[in-house]
Length: 172
Image (cartoon, rainbow, N blue to C red; front, side, top):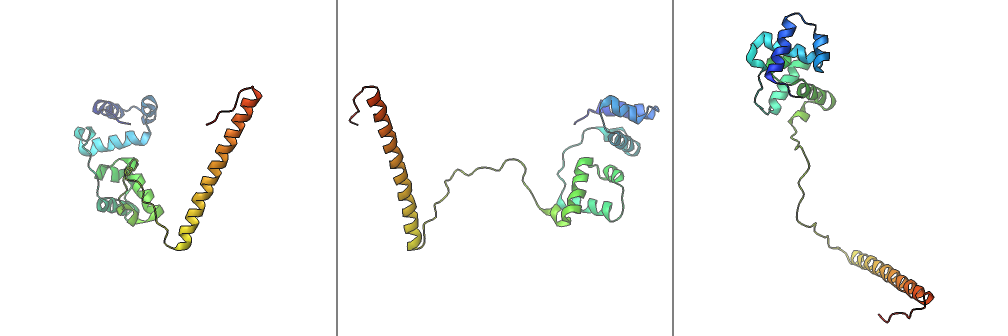
């Protein structure tokens, strides 16, 4: 959820005025860690850090560097958030990915969203051998035969109904 600069500043100033974080979290429907992150950012960088930041897509090398610092050097997650200005959700996702799949997984680019559909029809594979050609023809003829049987049964059923109602069968 996005929070305005004014709301963040109001919450941080109330924390500075000795208002309990737990109470503020309940009032504003926030997690306590989110408020703590804002207070730490404010303490370290000042008011401007609470303003909305521009979207910068982190490179895979940058992600790896940050995760290595957390996992190998023991940098606390909350300090990494402040140091690198990354959202908690993104950072936790990177760490989870590395723990589950390893560092190379951070370098794999995955497109988001629904995959685009190709407009071209899929090409039919031509049967290579004589046997495959005959099997394909046999399958096609069986399907055609089954269709003709169904049509014949429907026509006979329609004629039987017509006879029961006293109508003459059509000559079509």
